[in-house]
Amino acid sequence: MIKKVVTVSPEDSLEKAVQLMKLHSIRHLPVVEDGRLVGLVTESTIRQYARPEELGKPLREIMILNPITVSPDTTIDAAARIIYRHKIGGLPVVEGDRLVGIITITDILEAFIELMGLLRSSSRLDVIPREPEGLDGVLEIVRAHGGKVISIGMDVEPSGEKIYFIRLERMPLEPLASALEVAGHRVISVVD
Image (cartoon, rainbow, N blue to C red; front, top):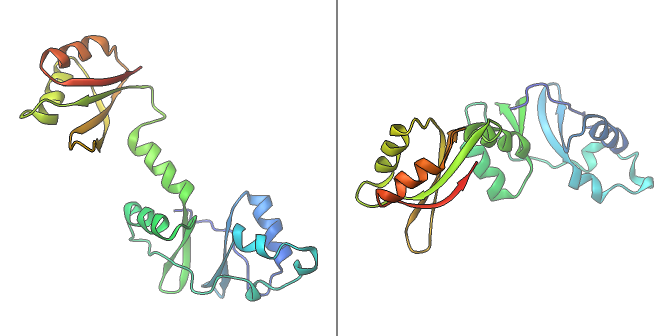
């Protein structure tokens, strides 16, 4: 969550909101009065009123009333589901009615990238494990070859087979892939 939030007041003009959004490269402006969240102005809200004759309008006339919010205790998973379900780009974070931050889709993407280790030097192996060993059997072979797991993702094929996307600290993957194949696991892809 971003704690230093750029805000506007209900009496500020649409023009001021546009200028702040451009200046700070943001798409969401919480509307705050005496520290309390009273509304939200978004890039898409502004697009509806961006005609020159409307730039002087006070934000109280165009702001989103009762925006969807979350508390500081909301998990990143729950915030992501809310953003996805409501097809919105950000959520003000409030304690009671006091604005304490904002979480945007960019913050969620950043958390995902960090969690998955996508910016680290790494290798990736996509595997369908042999049953009954499953993922445990795959990881046993990975460890035996000196592999250090950064993250694991999973997808389920229409057939019900599980594909595991195993991100490892950078290492040569060919010997590991061969060992997995010999053990009966199907290596779908190797990405160095």
